[in-house]
Image (cartoon, rainbow, N blue to C red):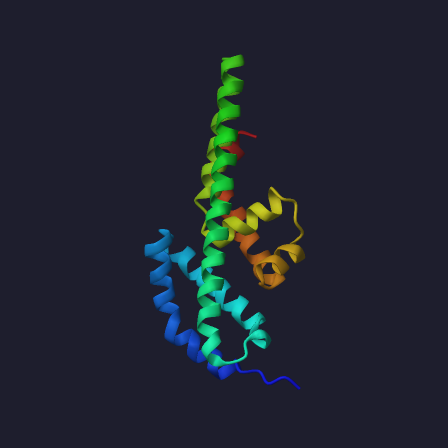
Length: 177
């Protein structure tokens, strides 16, 4: 039987000793906001916990954690870059459509798209991520929960809150329809 060096007690100690410092590290190295820093540090700790059987001593846990954190941060930056490209493309397509038809309808459609994109972008990071995975990528709640290592109930709650927030922000458009 393989001995597990990173048990719950040593993991908890590692978490308590390093969480804040890793959040600060993410803030200054990657420029993330506080919520995103907390999220990526949590994800890195989850990866550490999931890989605890591969770690052959408690001395190897911290370097593994730093590598996992760097990878998660780089993934987040790549993801943000893709989202920015998508937003730019959507805005550009909206401008092209407006140039083809200067009608009021096209302008209103462009404004609606911009407001939707802005409203989605203003959601808290995890909530936005869950909403985009559900609505833009077409993933089921169970798939989202698996990918983000959270419970399905958390996904349901976050989606419900996201929809409520979006309804509130878009109420003037909803009243029109």
